[in-house]
Image (cartoon, rainbow, N blue to C red; front, side):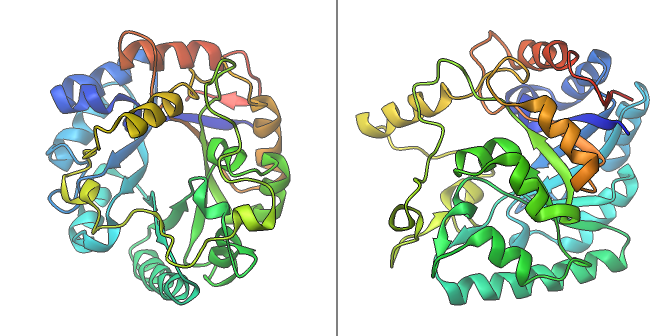
Length: 313
């Protein structure tokens, strides 16, 4: 059974900011027929984050046989959920993803699980599947247990599924295939990036020992709707200190076009139908060294074609 290949529009977010309609047209012309929209401006926009009416977005994609198969909404807790649902019904999407959480204490985590159950139940009533997308910090531990395990064990599978980001899973110190087996059918979508051969940053971002992985008292990881990023419409407000600029520079070197790096992507594709319910593997490029983001997604498409067991639609 083949897994369908999609693209998240976060990969071309700079182009979307300049001209969203021209960008979605170009994505369609390149041959991406399954698209995940990405809205990090949900405080101000219940749609795709760039002010495009739902009818216009659907009409533009329809020209190229492209379909919206999922959407990221951040910050979800501050979005108008009724309007989000309405927008996604119009574009024909049935998957809604919370792309990021913020975690600090056990009690706060349990409250978030209750909230995820509430939101997931409400969305299910509207025919929409609710998913959570991980980064590396969900593989930190609280009281010796991974945040990801808490999320799985304290939410109802009927109300919360997962979009497993394999890149961040690897960077959280996990064996990706083994973790896919561990999560099993809770995985409904996959995100795929690739790790650069010449990265200036280590693969494992959170350590291996229990002491390194445990969230310390007062430590907060991730972001929510109270962050400057969320309040600024999904645009980073960054410090200009030399140390932080150097960290960002090193972090960006870890990304390469998908299929050009060291990740065992064919193994992930092979494991998906065996262990998960993932229908799509969605390509995502956080940063590129190529001249434009269009060059990047074109190169990823070219590099990804060497794999088998995939369907471009």
